[in-house]
Image 1 (spheres, helix red, strand yellow):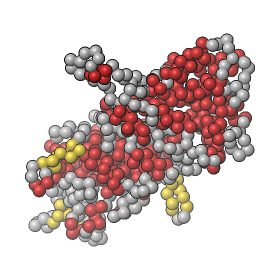
Image 2 (image 1 turned 45 degrees about the vertical axis):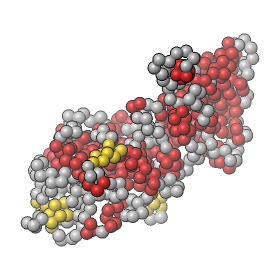
Image 3 (image 1 turned 90 degrees about the horizontal axis):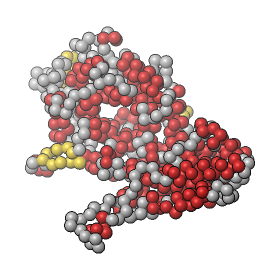
Image 4 (image 1 turned 90 degrees about the vertical axis):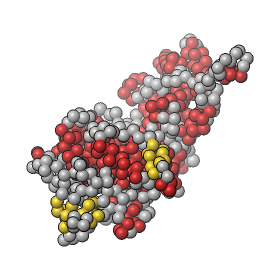
Length: 603
């Protein structure tokens, strides 16, 4: 089913908020009464979890009151009040869950007993809070009930998740001198009063509202922490363009699984699901709603179920699919993931063309990894595989990385390290044999002797495979994953090619004789691997030739790539390669995944 997507959350309002939340700095020599001193005394935001004691005290008071009064649920006999309390408990710093047993179980049972035949739980307000409570406390156990209630809410014009709405409205009030700890001050005082009056009847409706307010303050403060995390840089924001892409991609999944249409039938696909879940997880976890997180985890569980006995995730294109599945699963903290990643690691290592499969170091494809099976290795599959091996925890000194470097060198047009020469079939022309020899510009090709960008014929009849953008970035990424330092000549040569051929308008390097269309093949894949490579090596700016050949210019590649992708985004939030659909880039689903993975690196 397509899940209901609520209103924009978190950093939609955080962007203007952060601009006004700068910590005041005292002016040198300021005296009491000076304007500088006044700024220095302005309040600053508390970081971390706030209102812990107040939330704990109030939850304890609510529980005691329910037991002492012999009531069926934490909210007494009110569905809406019980649901509010459970939702707040699920979102608070304690993260109450169905595993907490008697703390939450009677209240969950009480809610389910009040489910109506049409899937609602009373009026729209009560139903919305029950959806929130069930989604956060036990998303697996009540998936069907939540789905039917969401459909009922959508029919009645209530698509926005209620707790998200509370947090969004609270964040909208944050200013330079107003933070969540101030916005929850009155609620904190109320919580203390309610908790102190243990002998008096409890006003449960009031307690529920106070609890929701305090927990919304906790969540809002964590979102502000994440947005101002210095490890991610001042520009670490989740932009409206990314949320728009998330909303579109969300509409393409069904219970967290993505499908491909073949022969008029929709077939669940592990490869697309892996990429789709990877892209959905580029939305920071702190900004996801309980429903979004639950559905992503549902998809991840389905993906886990697709793992085969040998550790791979598909019979077709087993290495590629296993690598993207690994990328998606490695972001999940479920205990089931670790053994699955270890199995995937063994599968990927078995795909490597090495001694175990009859290869010798002198063989062209030694150290490479291809789509799997008997297919020859290539740089695209190899960079995916090296990244996946890292994600599974393969030690940096494992021999697989050193063997991969042997192949990587043979994809690089760098005569000092590339020892491959020989005859290879032209992949584009039947019956044509190319007499291949390496070039020396530092860029890279798909595999030794093969380039989608064309060939340069030498006077002696030999051909040089042309270096091109996506493969050169794949090479830079792979060298870095394999442990080569930034000052290694092979890395420096690749960076030099990137500097000389910098562009975001196309996938650079193709032979002009091949026509205009070739420039745009694999464009969104190019954006993704560019961002991964430059981020991985820690490069903040790219030094490129200045305009009209005058000196050099520094390009903030993150800012430039973000602007480029945002300018190409479709009205519905997706991306598609309208200039060249080769390599499946005519599919908005795949291009959107590429773009979202790239944008995550544009912090």
